[in-house]
Length: 142
Image (tube, rainbow, N blue to C red; front, side):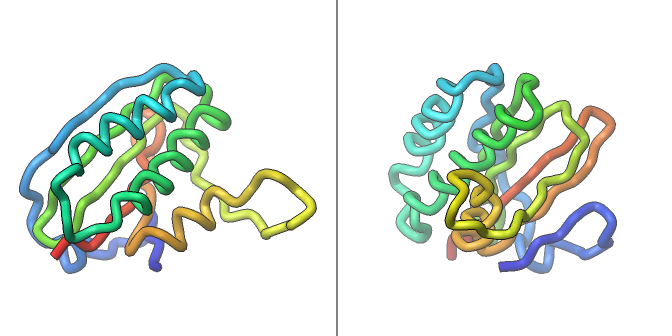
């Protein structure tokens, strides 16, 4: 698992290949129901995808959406993209604070989200934008 951010000028096309299509984009409120809505939308669009573990994609998506709801508390946008070598999920919100990988503490019931993202995705990162941030995760699909 590798993480990249906007300060590194890594050419991600080496990993993702060429952009092929946006499979879907959904705008959602910062409400807990949005986690389930995102899961349903992405699951339906990946039903026939045989080359990735959809359960891992959904676990990562759930963490990214939940983190956005909890920390950004703004409307969020979920996008699902097909690239030459990967499926990419993106969660964008209006908070410009980057994600934080916390120390794991078994005595605390929170703070594991970015560890799940790191463990289940093949590649992940974020970009700070004029509107906030975009956190993405890639899953090898070929």
